[in-house]
Image (cartoon, rainbow, N blue to C red; front, top):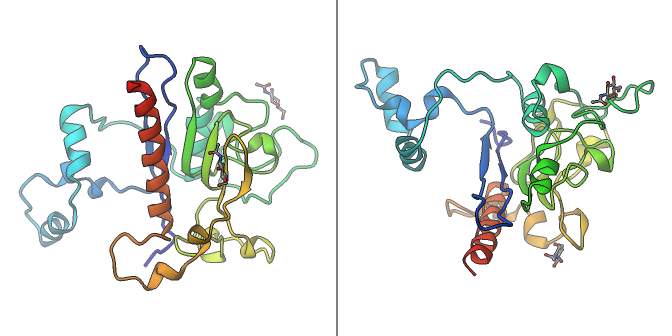
Length: 248
Ligand SMILES: *[C@@H]1O[C@H](CO)[C@@H](O)[C@H](O)[C@H]1NC(C)=O
Ligand SMILES: *[C@@H]1O[C@H](CO)[C@@H](O)[C@H](O)[C@H]1NC(C)=O
């Protein structure tokens, strides 16, 4: 059972000028090939395949794929932080961040590239999108560096952010216990890893519902203090606001 499974990251650089399309980028972490409905369409010939067909239902993604393009021979890096650093910086993972370093790692001899995540002197996609007239927002998992403000989503050009910094997080407690990161560090293991910034505030998320894990006992399928729920609500709000300004 993995209650800390690495979740979704959505980047929604939003519209500033009417002729530009909205861009919604969703990165699903550790998403298995067999977890996509389109890969379960063939008749099942083994008990495992039959079980897979019973368990896997992704009608929304299947519909997007049916209307769009599915790249079946797309290659990516094998682990999370390098992949995310690659997407954010527009470089191959080997040229930006080949290692899933602990956030505490540091090379004192190199204050530019000697931290986990993207080296400070690289430009990110959000900065480029903003230069191109977009509004930029990010929700979910970051995992592309947090050693200095420059490493954070704010420093990388996102106008707003709501999410967690490290490789993984506990969905209920929003903390980075050993189980979530594999790292033993007395201070880090006590950290609640959920923060945000907007125009007027930058720091930890403070509202009572987000900080609570009480809904763990709820029977409903989409409880209000669950981290994925909080991310979903935030993304929907961003989409709603940008669409209303678009149609205004
Ligand atoms: C960034 O800094 C590193 C040193 O940490 C240096 O080797 C590299 O050339 C610099 N890259 C850019 C794009 O400035
Ligand atoms: C920014 O976030 C803070 C903390 O959640 C909130 O109180 C404030 O209303 C937000 N400001 C804007 C402009 O959305």
